[in-house]
Amino acid sequence: MRSTSSRVRTNSVASAEACLTLLENSDADIALFSVDRIVERFGHLAPIRETLLARDDLPMATRQALLSTLSRTLAGFVVARKWLKTEHAEYAAREACEKATVALAADTAYDELGGLVRHLRESGQLTAGMILRAVLSGNVVLFEEALAELSGVPLDRVTSYIHDKNISGFQALYRKAGLPDVAYPAFREAIAAMRDGILIGEQGGVARLKRRMVERVLARCSNERGPEMASLLALLRRFAVEAAREEARMFCDDLVANDYMVTDGRLVA
Image (tube, rainbow, N blue to C red):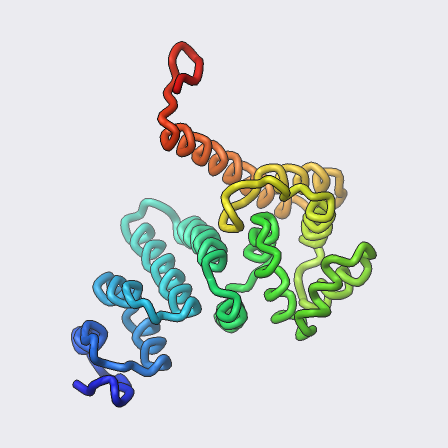
């Protein structure tokens, strides 16, 4: 095994056991592309996945790749057990991965966020659903980075379009990014809600959906006409349920943290 004075490259035919041994060697300086290769080949194996995630120097893009691999592994397990049909299992896994990815992005340093977004695009994960989840979570930075990556427009111009009172600039940017027309009303209403200050006072950072934001966008989009709106409204309703559940969980956590209990229907300290 080589020391930190030289970088270690994995052999294209190395076994999972050999890769695990390499990862567990604290003196090994492993090239990043080799780490990515290990994730691609053996990320579905729990010992390798856990060893990688324990590394302090693991880039966020690589962490997300492990999340994606784990979601596919779990979907395959559920299908093999015949607990869900393939289509339903894959959909549930994809939605869980998107939720985890937005939470991961919330903890990503600004200088790493561009790399994470680029990885999401290259791996086909930078979808309208994930971007909408980001903006409905109040993660404007991730929203801006995603639109810049998809459209090729400089980030500063993307920021100006999003915050400009004239929505026409954002509409043109949205189309240049290649996002689906059916989802545009949700993004339009989300931006309007942000401009109205709906995120002010919200708790939970930018890692989770904001209930007031989601409910407002859902209410406004419910007035849209057309059969193609059904899928968007269904997604927003799922977001609304998730946001309400998360808000209730946070409320209960606060009660526990402050030593409150319920007695005869009343909160007692």
